[in-house]
Amino acid sequence: MLPLAVLASGMVTGVGLNAPSSCAAIRCAIDNFSETRFMDSGGEWIIGSQVPLEQPWRGLPKLIHMAVPAIRECFAHLGDVRPEMIPLLLCVAEPERPGRLQGLDDQLFHDIEAELAVHFHPRSGVIARGRVAGALAMADARRLIHEERMPFCLIAGTDSFLVAATLKSYEEKDRLLTSKNSNGFIPGEAGAAVLVGPPGRSKEPELLCVGMGRGQEKATIDSDEPLRADGLVAAFSAAFAEAGCTIGDIDFRITDSNGEQYWFKEAALAVTRILREHKQLFEIWHAADCIGETGAAAGLCAFGVALAATRKHYAPGQSALCHFGSDDGERLAMVLAGGKERQN
Image (cartoon, rainbow, N blue to C red; front, side):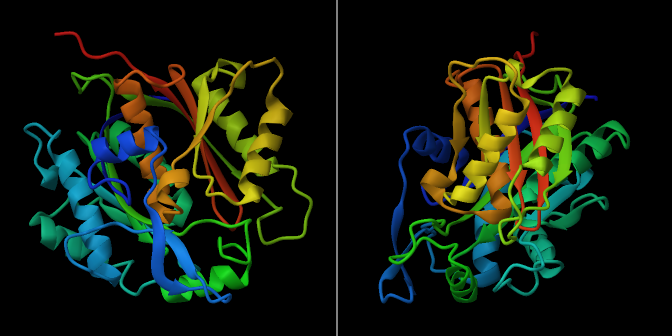
């Protein structure tokens, strides 16, 4: 495959209002978990990761004010390319998400454009696939850049699990971390963005996506089927085939695992099934440890963390395996490789 370069990132999270501060906090394992205004069924305050914005926005306005600063961070790297010349792929919550806000599929995109005072390229769109939206957007961006010759593509995601109906539903399914359930996730919220383009466009070290793969898992988190990680294995195999490597060549992993045991068990099973050589150390990074479950922004936060680790030289190696999963069984994997900075 033709590689795709991650050139810049922007982040607004519970631990930082820009990418450098967010990535530094995540690197140091700093979190901002605190009591929210929501209470669980045991009468205890639900712990969450809240973004401390200057005003107490709720609903769509909060999603807008988390996404816009992240997008502006990426604008600083456009050079002489105007925003109107590039598509924006906006990642939002999946349609089946409990408590999903109205307006995510149409109004949110136009409100973001209005806040930024720009109109993005007509090939822009909304990807309503939750946690896997960022990876799906990367696949779309690859086509736009290499087949339709777009100079860049901007991928942004904004999401919040700090919604009463959302928390109630996940608590009823025993998926939320509460005073009565230890096997659950901490709800969070975030806005994140990455600027992607063809390799060689940045003077700084680039993060290259050199392989992508997809799979479908039958034993989803809500099913009673035995988990074999078939979907993730298929995604891994396809990504490695495109990248021309094996899992033995990978230095570390970055995932959207949110604290629920299911996702860690699946990842461990998948690695066990395809690893054919001994690896002394195979780190797995998951930003949810610091910022909670951020849904449609999770994948883009992972790319931002990977880019920072590449440029600041604290990654365990040059190659990373990213993988993401949705509740309905969709699995995506990507092989990322650190690129060298451009020589003048």
